[in-house]
Length: 228
Image 1 (tube, helix red, strand yellow):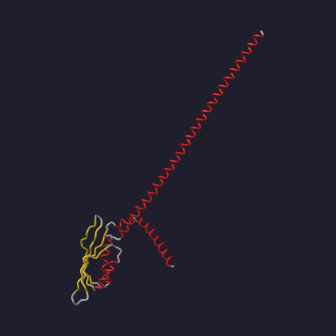
Image 2 (cartoon, rainbow, N blue to C red; image 1 turned 180 degrees about the horizontal axis):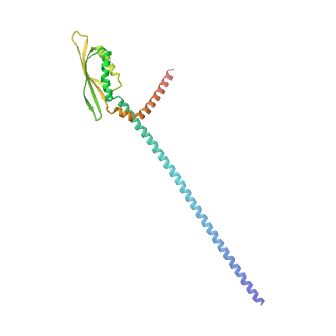
Image 3 (cartoon, rainbow, N blue to C red; image 1 turned 45 degrees about the horizontal axis):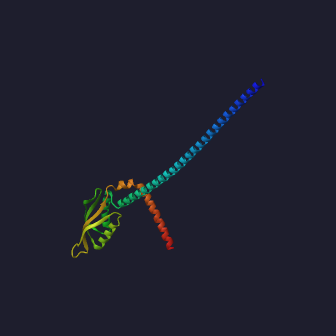
């Protein structure tokens, strides 16, 4: 009987050890699995951080390139506006058809100022300059003293517009006269689209005129300072 009890005790002890070994194996497996999960998560996190860093770096590069493009476009835009302003300034030296008629009519007033007798003053056929510009002509014949003729031509030249006195001939009225007969043509540069162009470019013209005024004021102040 006693022998039988001992065997049973051993059997129970062996099963207990077996159960403990299972626990150790399971625990070790869980530890290994946890370690693998930790390593994988660290690698994933590292990759994500690296990707984010590259993304941020790439975004910064794209932003810099975009800023550079916008800046370059602004520079180009300003240069285009500057070119348009310079073109508008040049057009200001041309007469519109209305200004041409006003100029032609003003010659009579200038002639009276210098005691000029107008024998003829007529608009004649002009010449085309390209597709949009023209030179309009005014033929004249004046009876005038040579001195006053010089004054009259100087007065005409004071205009801000482009014009030339061409094909002029001067001869004495008669051997006993102190007056001369002056015949010739006044050529005036005309741009029919002037009024519309200046209206369309009014903002650009105003902007650059203000800039030029400021620069002129600075230059004047600097010159005055140097002179003092």
